Image (cartoon, rainbow, N blue to C red; front, side, top):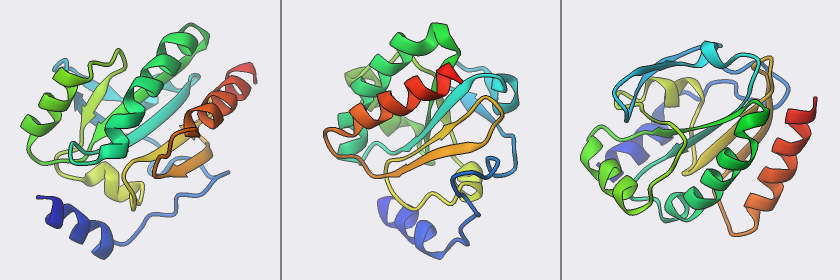
Length: 160
């Protein structure tokens, strides 16, 4: 599975994801871990963090508690984190979520359609969208300390 995803990431044409541009395709709908469909356009007017992740990604698991803290701290100011799992088999993701429970919605991109639209080329890949759906920040990978940068960026965007 991991090899297949990496092969897809290398061979798929990357979408034009760039800071300052509207989010690719502007909208998508994915099934959440809670079983309901989440449509990105329903969150227009909020600051949205899209965090693409996989169960085999150590840095993804490492940053989850930090993303959850951001969700809890800024949710009341119009901020939402979406964890977008990119695996075809949901069982591995479910195991990670049992070990590291989070309060933000987890979405499943099991056909990699959204990942392809966003040109996901790293794990994790995190985008911050402003209230108008414009990509304002893009992060590839995660290292300890990135959460400070995330918080600074979220704080700035919710104040706009």
